[in-house]
Image 1: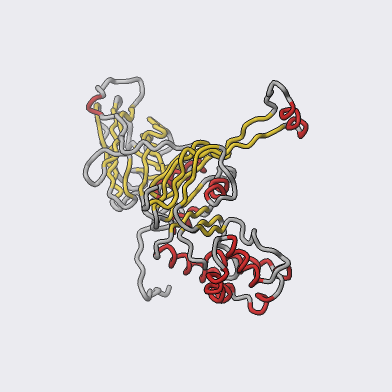
Image 2: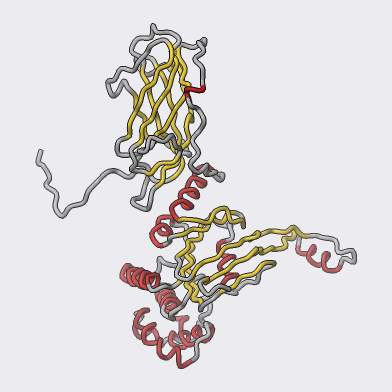
Length: 414
């Protein structure tokens, strides 16, 4: 294995046999014809990836997607059904805090016991025990049997042991919210210190913002299958869209839809007017379907007018999220503008000068031509254009509102 690789997973699968009734297991074992009484359940199905030394990688996915199974195989707790895992470095795992503790032993005795289980000698643990005791900060209880500990003291000691053994690879599974605020701050500082020091980190969490904060790369598992592996913001945005939509949202990369109006001949129709094309131009005047969240965007709506008698028609453009959340709706009536309305081909533009300030993910446009009250639809095009907002982790929520920070703010009195 390449010395620059910390973890290599190749065509990894984990299959469990599921039986409808307990007796079916015996029937299958005793059947001379090897009749199958079970159904195969793939907790992991043909997973492959490599993690370089020093990388911080988030593992995301819904409950039951295979995240914990993957971590347990990497740490040696479980064996794979097929495929292979190679680990280059000493692992410390925060999977089930304190799983190896003996409740009859004291805190100090459990520190040495866990050290032995992780491959350290008694002498090596003696050099580390003071630092672990200091980090756990549970006072005289360190000399008492673990069975007398409160749940808070228990997880403090378990976390202190796992994080203070100078691992080359640290694996964390939803284990950062332990203890009180001061202890959590201590844990966060230690985590950042380890990451900056070159420790390889695998981080599993349902908190997508935490994944964005800590990780540079993300792996998305779904029902045992790896759907995506790439830059953390791109993968987590796709995952959030998936949670909203209930299905995987396919990324079309940077391919604009083909609806150039010059290719569409003007043919008078039965309607009063018709929207025939919709373009989204970025700051380079390129028709695209992917834009940075703060990038200037110009929308061109192309429409054919067949009847000029309409008085003060209105053009509206709306942005919606893939979960149908109404992001922003604007129209020329509200902005007190008059659109061109001449027989033949017409066009009108709307500019988002500071970008479409939504957080990263997929969105779509609706466009409509309406009467002067903006009530009656003359031509309504739902989901006329799908697009992706690209953003780094610069804010949370739904929108990134333009802002600036300062040391003091003068508040005007009414």
